[in-house]
Length: 125
Image 1 (cartoon, rainbow, N blue to C red):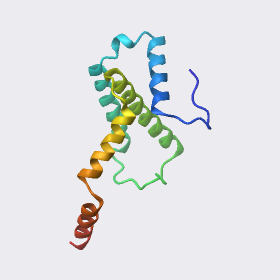
Image 2 (cartoon, rainbow, N blue to C red):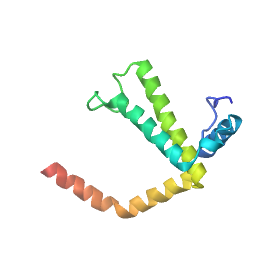
Image 3 (cartoon, rainbow, N blue to C red):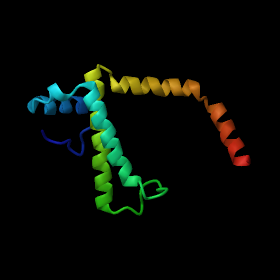
Image 4 (cartoon, rainbow, N blue to C red):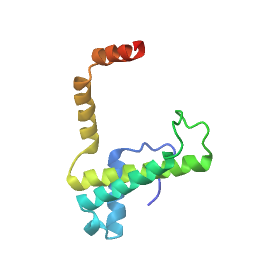
């Protein structure tokens, strides 16, 4: 299973298909129940959290991080994403559509005017 080339667009569908192929080749579908995948996802989120655990606030872009730290972070972020994509596939959820729907719901729940007004209030206090 080859990785994506620099020019290739990586979509959730591509990741879903690659994860399905990866699991099938290894006969892992039998282990990929929603519960098992969720527990694996939680474990990976824990590993991701460990990276930030003692760093305090980290500036955007991670300017003070070594290349090996950035590489490790990318690997852990990828683990979380891949388990999430696999979990959504095993549950029959179109993750891309669900995410877009959630953005739309959040736009209704948190209208721009209300958010900008509340941020001004916070700054004035």
